[in-house]
Image (tube, rainbow, N blue to C red):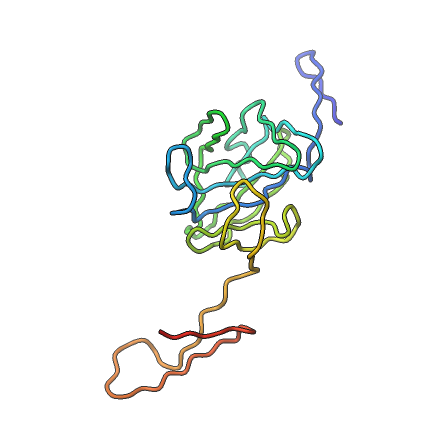
Amino acid sequence: MKIFLKWGILVFYTPIFAQILINEYSASNLSRYTDNYQMEEDWIELYNIGSADEDIGGYFLSDDPDDLIQWMIPSNTVIAADSYIVFWCSGRDEYSGDHYHTNFKLKQTKNNPDHVVFSDPEGNIINDFEIQKTQLNHSMGRSPNGSEAWKIFTDPTLGNENSEPSYTAYAEAPLMSLEAGFYNGTQYLEISTDEPNADIRYT
């Protein structure tokens, strides 16, 4: 525990490194989950892997590691042991009850991808991940739940334990022996892939 003296008052601050984690996020939630405004917004999920409740008020979420204090988590925001809190990246900058909206949105189409960053009141980064591009309604999350390994979830688990199926990466596009275009007469097309155990279906 660290003790700080500020304006003559003792302030006790207990770091929660490694206990509260960014556990899952989605930057492609276009038609899956809706917030309290019935809007499909992107989201960040925090997970408390510890055995005690933690107050994360005064901590920060950001989409830029060079601007850690972009959005401060409201005071008295408590995440229970072995539980989750979801933050909607809607740009609304508000909260009501258990509905939290950051002042930024997540974007995965920029040349310089956004990040998802979680930091403490002292400016120490707890988690910082560059957003990985995902397909429609997919998410990136820790697998197994709360671990160091990150995978793609085709069936996101907003506010719940990350579960299968999960994948390490998307398959590379198959190779075609003919260029796209219009051809006269019969043509023979060969489709191949270097992906192990892949099935190619052509329709």
